[in-house]
Image (tube, rainbow, N blue to C red; front, top):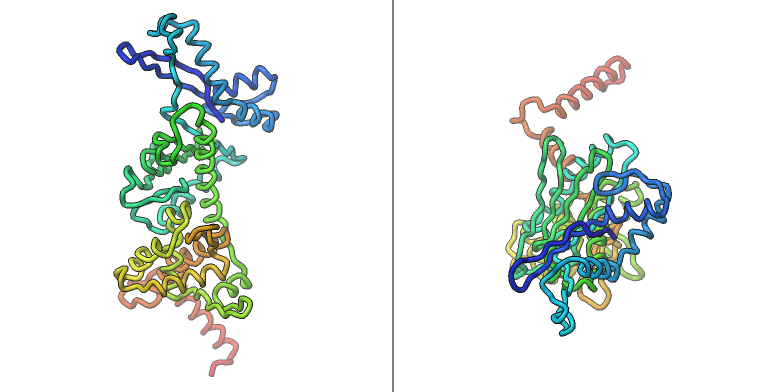
Amino acid sequence: MNLSLSSLKFGSYFPYNAKVCLNGHEWLKRQLTKAGIKYEALDNGLLRCSDPRRAQALADSLSAAKIDALLRKWLQGLPHPFTAADQRAGYRYEPFIWQCEFSLTQVLDRPLSGRVFFEEVIRENLDLGRPDQVALIFARRVTRRTPGWFRTRVLTEGVMPSLHLDYWWNRIKQYFKEGRGLRTETTINHPAAFKVLKRLQSLPQWRQIGFQANRRLLDVQKISQDCALGEAAFAKVNQPIQVEDRRVSGLRYGEGRVQALLSAVLLFVFVANGFSAKDLRPKLAALLGLRADQLSAGRVTYDLRRLRLHGLIQRIPRTHRYRLTERGIQIAAFWTRTYNRLLRPGLAQLADPACESPPLRRKFLALANAIDQAVAQAKIAA
């Protein structure tokens, strides 16, 4: 947890609000120095540390009570609008959290390779489910009445890209810090989105929300970069299976309905919040080119059953909602991306006579010619 006092400003008019700005990275550095633990700074963070476990324990030790005590200490020595009589009458400052940022920096051994990896992560996750409104990783249900922005943006400053994800007026930013580490930071500006109070005593809840959002984003990205499937795993999903006394049809790789179904459940909002049959129905219908009323509820229920019995989704306890399993994200990402980015465009190049000598067709023609020549040389032609 990262916060420390850096400035204190008083308003000059009633009700004389005060604003405290805190920086936890600097606070942690001072604690490490005091404890005699060697470290190397990385701007607003640490590049390396001789005792990372102790450093994490020190960071976790910064509590709402310590922040409040620090504030009261400064108020005792600084002039402020409340006189001694006001304070005896019970008037005092009550701290609230206006904005809070929670960050996670992963320092890489080979920064150049790390930057290439990050750029690939951005490219791979832009169209993951192709949602029209993205409520990323915050584990909150979104309805049409939910205010604020829901979007994914990629901004480039110079040659360094950064990924920005907005949910209400909260956001996640991900970028490469000083060319050395991948920084993921969640900024909470509107805690009402999570039904959390602004009081300083709510800091543990803010912390849990912020760091869990960071981890969810990294987990989805990690899985999207690690989805290799063996032949047995492929057959287990692609072919029908027997679950106890029930036969469950397979999720055939090349079937259009299966591709649409897996694309729908990969929506970021579904990964974060889970989904019900009612949530899935309009998304799946749109991917199939249908109206929602043209897709029966029974058909959606049948598809959910297939996904559940194949182990790709699981029911959230005591609800009628489902969540993708880790295996489900792997398979759905692998199925849809290889189909959309490799199989379909590749076959289009081979099959379209109007396409003038695409590279893939030229290679296949060269292969066919080489095979014909080998057959002729071996004198085994029919």
